[in-house]
Image (cartoon, rainbow, N blue to C red):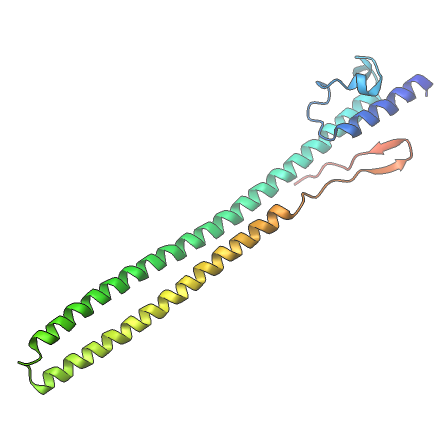
Length: 191
């Protein structure tokens, strides 16, 4: 190979490697970094091939990054939906507890008003109903606590997953070298 051409190819390889993302490799001012003429990349087959390989590798990495972001968004949406469902169930439980307490208060008032006029059997029946309602309140309170715990766990899991995703670096593609003066980019992924 002609010595100036080999030097120009080496310069072009170094410039392409230094840029990293090469979507617009030809639009960038590579000739100044590589030390070659404007038409060298177009006229030299090796130069054209280097730029094409760099663009292919960059496009593949962008595709992988886009798929990773899409997968992360789907996971976030699932956790968000679970948290919203738990919040809705918690709100419904709170409304039920308030309704039960109001009903108990009304019944207790009726018991006090009518306590003197009712016979012993009627009073016993009201006490039984009151006990049943208190058990129902305890059950709803326990359900409320369970849902509150589940909501806290879902929020914690979502927060932990988000932290893990934010802290994990994107998997960088490391170039391999076959020849000490030539940098070879990884092949494009087909998914």
